[in-house]
Length: 352
Ligand SMILES: *Cc1c(COP(=O)(O)O)cnc(C)c1O
Image (cartoon, rainbow, N blue to C red; front, side, top):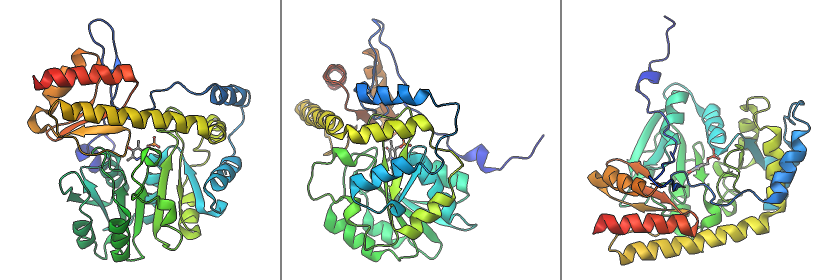
């Protein structure tokens, strides 16, 4: 029997969101925060065109996509690093800091990939409980020691949807030593409407330890292709680029991401529709008597405690798949109006 790393026996595997179907065949997947829209024709066309070249390796440096991202955000190309989904960029960030004894700090509950990536990297997780549904930034600053190599700040937070405002985030960043990377995970940035929630790109320029992590998976609707990126000052971006597995970002992902940036207005119109649905869903839930934290992302959070799995089962009867985190609560993605109505009907039944 080969000897495997001990951590493989104890780490929690990533649980992907599942689809369920009602007896009548209806099925609404509100468990993975995906875009409810089909890909844009222009993006499908770029992928079809790109398919003619898949016997070739992709551009290892993803030069055109790097240029497109840099141009879109008005940053130097040297500040951009790409990966196969932002989860992989996060894994690459671990590769840049992981040493025996290293610690990573993050809020809990937050994005499920953080503990997994920390375990895989052999880094010790220091989890700081949320204060209510929000990051407890004071407590996070307090647990930073000379073993801390990285801090994740998920803004808005997955799964609670709450966002950190500028003054709080800036005073936290002021307290973190420059030797510690702070990763602002902004996977849901495009859904933020609170003007007080800072765009990480306005924070990293004079902070050499701040990383802004973004993805094409959510607002840009490319979850199936796996492409994400980070923006940070040159030493950080250079270090992260060194950790990429050769050719990690495949050629179809590269052309689709470029086409998505070119069609950004259309995609952001769709985001706006999701944001309107988010308001409708939250207000309807509040009308039903639920407590729903204000969400700046494309999902809402219901703190159901021990009733979490019962609630998910009730939704499944209507073909609505939600994401239960027993015994904390349920995260429900904002989908099409029809899917949201199906979810709201199940939620009303559960309260009755
Ligand atoms: C969905 C999500 C990501 C994006 O993952 P990809 O690998 O880019 O698909 C990153 N961070 C958070 C918090 C997320 O919810």
